[in-house]
Image (cartoon, rainbow, N blue to C red; front, side):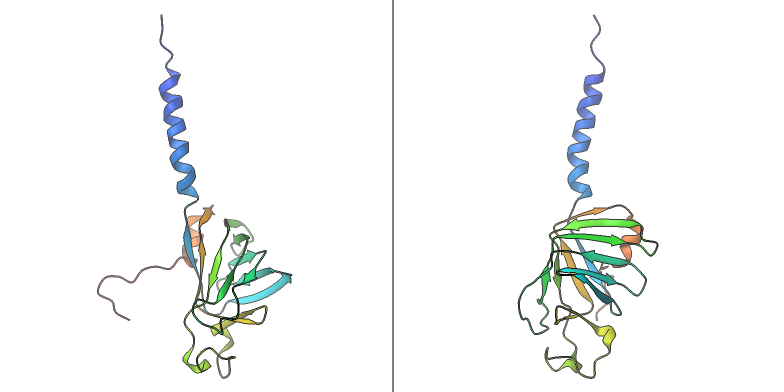
Length: 162
């Protein structure tokens, strides 16, 4: 009598799927660089375009409150799609949080921007978000890892001090 040889193969495949699924949807931080522009597409629906041409489109945006441009100011949103310059989807995520970057010294402690280059901030629903900002995702599905590296903050090499 022959033993079924497909059982170990099936168990190995099931183990691979249980590990690969969560690894593909791991959390990520993305940087929104200086020079990014914002377009409002509808209530709570925005499109950010980076200087390189990458597009970050998110819906169901909710401001965290009047943060006055403080580094924690920003908001949260539901669905997000990140597309390359040709419009091809490179990543998608849900439950993202937009956090403002450091407040420009020319802005006078988070007040309305005066004498500040427009490339240093974006306005979403009249709330200033300083660039470079960070978007944090609890789960992000990545379809093109190389294209997404343009928005992934890289740690400073050892020995480099800002």
